[in-house]
Amino acid sequence: TRFYGERHSRAAPHVSSSVIQLQSEDGAASALDWAESDVKKPCPMSCAVQRSEFEVDDIPGARGVHRSATAEDIERVGTEDERPFDGYWVGFTDGAFVYTVDLHGPPGSVSEEQALDIARAYHHRLAGS
Image (cartoon, rainbow, N blue to C red; front, side, top):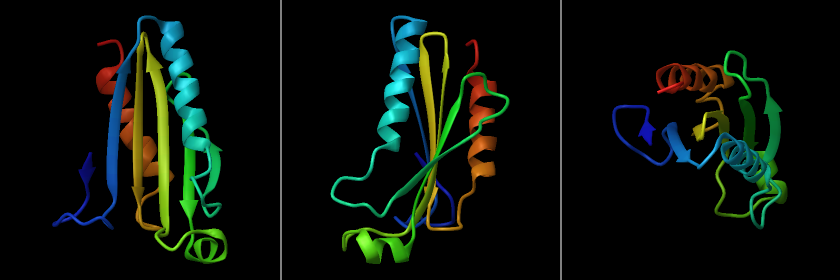
């Protein structure tokens, strides 16, 4: 996990990446299905988070999910400990590996294009290695 900015704070935009090694390509495909399904689930005890899919070009079989919660949605249907955010998740496989990138921060501090740029660079560096 990395943060953007001069000093770390919980409110700063962050990017996280992960890798999962499975025993086969089929196992990786199944794990990617599970990871995508999990990131699309509603937050526990809150309905404030909106979820939608987005296209991921240039990475074969990749998937993208945008998650966000506005101050208005949180006030209307959220919980008092929630904060507004934007988040972009990208997942893809390479052989028996599943890779994910999660870029998130306060509303307007991160974008789909930034998440795609990071995921493409990650894929370019790791694919086939």
